[in-house]
Length: 197
Image (tube, rainbow, N blue to C red; front, top):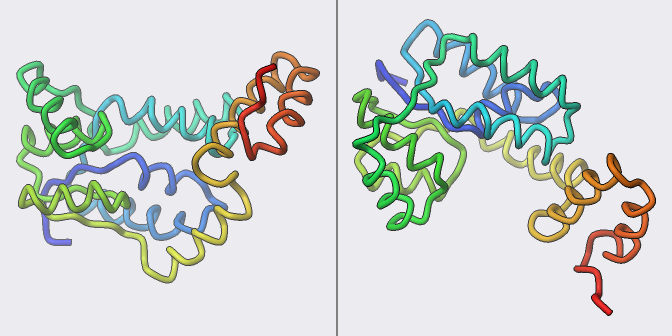
C-alpha cells in the first residue's frame, strides 16, 4: 500500500488480536508491515469499542480483554480524539451516510491527519470511504473471507436476535445462573424473544 498515513478501523484490530480467528494472520501481518512503512491513526473510542466487542461477541475474559486493549494502546498506532469543530461534520456524516458513530470519527481523523486511506473490512463503510475519494483498504484475502464465514457460523451465535439473546444470557449467567437457564429455555435456545404473559 503506497500511502504515508492511514486510519484503521476496529474490525481489523480485533481480528489481529484473536489468534484463533481466520483473519488473524492477514490482519496481524498487515499491522507488522504498517509499523515500518506508514503511520496509522485511530480514534480513542476505538479502544473502548474493541473492549466491548472482545467481551460481548467473542466472550473474552474481562482481564484478557483489558490486557489486549492496553497492549494495543501502547503500540505504534496513534489513538486520537477528534477535534471539537469536527462534531457537526461527524454527526452529519453518520446521518447522511448511515454509518456507525466511530466510523464518523474515523472519517474526521482521516481529514484532520490528511490520511490517504482507511483500513476496514466493513463493506458499507468501504463504499462511503470511496465516495469521499479516499482509498479503502482491507488486508483480508478472499480465501480468508470464506474461512471467516465458516468459523463464525461454528463459533458465534447467528447475527441479529440470536446473537443479542446469547449476549444477554451470558450476562445473566454471571449474576443469576437460575434466571439465565430460564431465559435460555424461554427464548427457545436464542431463537425468539420470551413470551410475556
